[in-house]
Length: 351
Image (cartoon, rainbow, N blue to C red):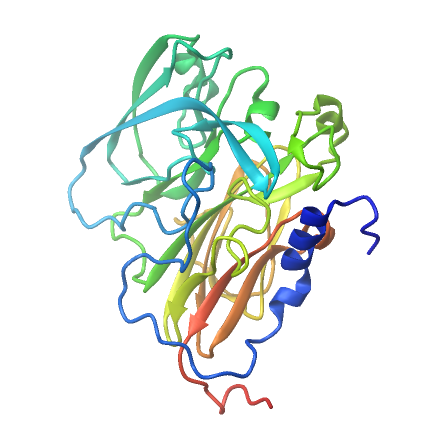
């Protein structure tokens, strides 16, 4: 790989996000297991960044009768580090990428409020892919600076759906962070798992090369060419690896569920867990369907989702990537789930 065009910081993060991350844990004493089932990913995200904690998602639905759920989405511009010394002025809902997961059950009524602060210089809206109606709600929520608008809808069918800003310049607004997921659980709920993680993949188009120090400038022409300099999880290069904000942690023997929303705006993700497979998978977020079993890689189109589960029978790293691998080695896409606990020599034996 030719790194001549990258700065020192860029080279460092490239090394972090390359496939060498997929190597097994070095021989050492067994780390202390994660003994509880509380959300934990094993690291610290610096305050003020757009990077959403992948464990901060709503709990599985446990109520039996429909409710009214109120959600407020507030547009917020945040200058955040893509990697050390490299920043971008992101557009977000509620200051994070991906935007907060909305989690309800079939039959719930949702009251969606979109607020655009007075100091904004852009118009925003929200298009939820589970809404049947003009623009998925975008026609009812387009807000100029200083405005708020509200609409209600009923969730009549299950699934994991994308939502995003729906104004005319939606492609730029999505690229810069305005996308998230709404999960509508079936009446019986989802199967129980030990842990859940929530990730959002998107491309960022900048005039500056990957790793160039300073504040980056959005490049609309590169977006039209579909030629991003960055492809990222949660608004940062390789966020959830040990050398950045820390790996997502689980115990050996647990089952984890991963929710991926692919914001895009242009690229399809070939979502793959290096060192594992999806033991159960709901392609395109189709929670009404019977899940597939033992899937290695599945495409998640821009503006769509994927829900998959993994068993963790041995210690080590499952590195979540887009198997369009240049996006891993040269554009910054990587996150890791680290299974902590005793070896299982019957399944995997190595020196």
